[in-house]
Length: 145
Length: 106
Ligand SMILES: Nc1ncnc2c1ncn2[C@@H]1O[C@H](COP(=O)(O)OP(=O)(O)OP(=O)(O)O)[C@@H](O)[C@H]1O
Ligand SMILES: [Mg+2]
Image 1 (cartoon, rainbow over the protein chains, first blue to last red):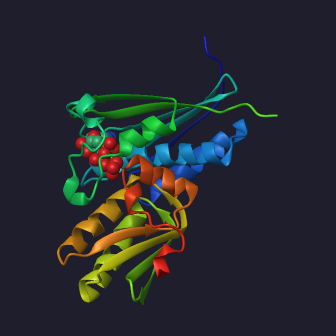
Image 2 (cartoon, helix red, strand yellow):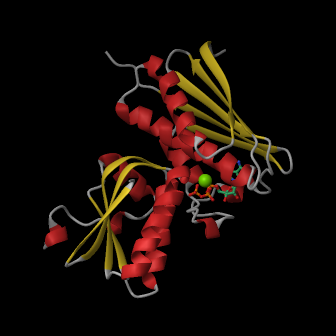
């Protein structure tokens, strides 16, 4: 059993100006693990991608709730769960391919999942069409000193 | 202003400051397109030295401007990315657009 030693749950309105707020919240919560600047930047980038996807794809032309759960596991790992109750993804495996995007006209590069994957230690995506999408990430913070 | 534009013999330089995400990229896109459509420069160099955060929206911003510039045969270059921005550029395959330090005025 893994031990959850702290947690935080927030709900953000799906406005694009809340993307930076979500990054700041995650970075502030993660700071208790004494991460390096590099690790904080990894977390910010991964959170930014997941939250932006909820806004851009999940809710498209509407504004919905984005739930973010942050947990500290075993005093060395940050757990991040970000979910929307938007349109969902038909084919998750295809969506996770680098450069795949359903919104090329909006200048999306199709790199969000690739960023989440490479800047965290574990990425899971669960989605149901018409129900929404949940992204779960783990980021291990190296113990120092 | 998130972008400062300057011209020299090599064309247009767009110096971006602050964070590039989906939210901020919208204004940056409008500003830059207004500028390049007016002057149609040979090269557009993004000076990234003032960028404090960038996610994949920054990649979309650069690729989108490269597409615009192509209409009149112009090219996009990237100057002075931080190590962090460089990491993002590498992941997205945009590293070849980075110009070496000092080469800008050569
Ligand atoms: N929360 C979501 N709700 C619905 N669809 C999603 C969601 N997240 C991702 N997708 C789908 O997965 C595709 C790939 O997502 P990814 O983040 O990798 O690229 P992108 O968002 O299209 O581009 P970029 O992230 O580079 O701006 C999206 O184009 C979209 O079709
Ligand atoms: Mg994305």
